[in-house]
Image (cartoon, rainbow, N blue to C red; front, side, top):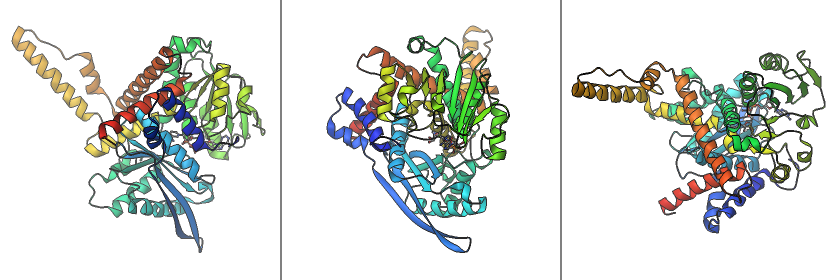
Length: 469
Ligand SMILES: NC(=O)c1ccc[n+]([C@@H]2O[C@H](COP(=O)([O-])OP(=O)(O)OC[C@H]3O[C@@H](n4cnc5c(N)ncnc54)[C@H](O)[C@@H]3O)[C@@H](O)[C@H]2O)c1
């Protein structure tokens, strides 16, 4: 990343800005800011006729509520600073969303494209053994999820390896989230982060006061969008937004360049092209350019970085031609870039909130695994019974019949995916309302990000104080 500061220093600066604004006691602020512990592992796997050594990390930033939660990424550029920064972001994200998890993150320094599926399985199982042995992967203490370079298959291998290591743990399937449906996963997890990005944009558009700051119209109709990275998060966000009436994805930036179409790219076709060819090059539904250096500055209403951290810096921030930036990736903007964009009046929906859909639905999956009951069944039963008891007692008192109300009818017919989506929608909208309200009622709070950090930090401090630590 450009600039003199590291990713972790940038996250800490964002935290510190919020802590200073609420005059948080210095000792407590430091305790909240630093990582509790980081496990470094180097392990060997015999592959292709020789021993290969792999390096990985799992950082627990906080466990004020346990388990600590956060993804595991497989990337050749992974490093300790990045893992600790991402773990810190997880702490603040869970606190902002009011989800009872601490923050964690892990990585393996590996390019998954260089290995076959069989080899990746052996490497993942070996990595899992190390994590389980040191209590960095268990349903009660530390629960990973997919991130860059990992997916539901990786999670399934991890869950299976955990069960082999700890066969008597009846809650074993809750040791990771983002598993395939047939292996204890939950409907809607794969799309969850992208779906959350869509909900966060909808919440922004519904807030007249926030929208007025960008001079965007009161509807997504006609909105133009630039997306960087068409992986899990970017693809789902782009797909759901392109399904919104009149919203157009005009540029998609990938590893091998940028593809543009002012009338809107067909996201489904582009994704299929990337799966088949490995990139956006040669896609005939738009104009491809190998040079994507300035593509983040393509003119648009909404810019969605959904690939890497540190892509918006003080060097390119002044030249961006957008009104709204939605941080689908973690840490896509440096602290300095954030300051520049703030002065330029560009509104930023921060990563802590914009990509929280993944951890929110992971929470639903974890709860489902621990209860051993299909998600929503308990709520349906309770509601059904509550209404029946009430209806019967009213009938007895008045002699009239009382039909069950519409909410009960909805819950009775609802599928898991409906419950997941409505639960996610509810979480995203309440967190947005809280952030926006704080931003708009306190002149000292300069942006949504600072509001998000203040809400998170206050919540964490409240827990530490209650615990007496
Ligand atoms: N997967 C989740 O549920 C989840 C949840 C929260 C946050 N995130 C964050 O979202 C971001 C993306 O995660 P993902 O799971 O979609 O990863 P992914 O590996 O599925 O997708 C990343 C995409 O970015 C592209 N890319 C890589 N380098 C690029 C470059 N230089 N320019 C343009 N594109 C490039 C890749 O080709 C790929 O399509 C990360 O910051 C991750 O931490 C992911």
